[in-house]
Length: 221
Ligand code: DC
Image (cartoon, rainbow, N blue to C red; front, side, top):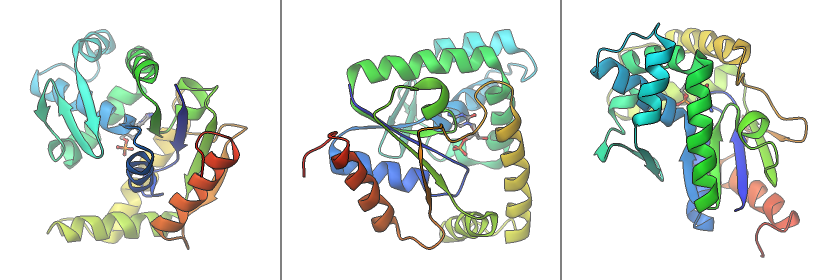
């Protein structure tokens, strides 16, 4: 099946872009960050130690995780909001750092690509999981822009528990962890197209990606 990968740091615009693209194309939107978050939520709920890689990998292999244009389901239960809470975000790092969990996630992600055309977003989609994808995009933006976007999203849902500076600080920490993990580190594939989104609207980014998809013969105009 056909695959468009969108990698890059938090707040670069991956989720909004992936969702809009998948809707426009009628393709499956695979949010791999949400998949790692779902494993972290399940580990917290089942009291599985975040230090126990073997148990985490077994847990990951046992879960049914589905995403649909932004909504995420764990064994049929809608967990869209729960996986965004700070406690789950913190736990996700342990899950994403574990190579054998990543191996399970790679299997799950590749098996979805056998069934559906995919717009997939994450950190390692163009590098590790789908190195042969027809179109690879790396979305980026400055740390200040990314923090401001996250801050605004939180304020919009009535959450003012953290200042913009606090968000910036934790984002920089997370970026560092994401860039430096030994397996599945966040990186642009050598053949990825890098789009800096600081000055671009969502519509503009989506338009650029659709044009690229057209040029590559993935879709017709
Ligand atoms: O995109 P996100 O913030 O929901 O991702 C949650 C965490 O999962 C983030 O710290 C990076 C990690 N992640 C990963 O390691 N590999 C992916 N393909 C997607 C996310």
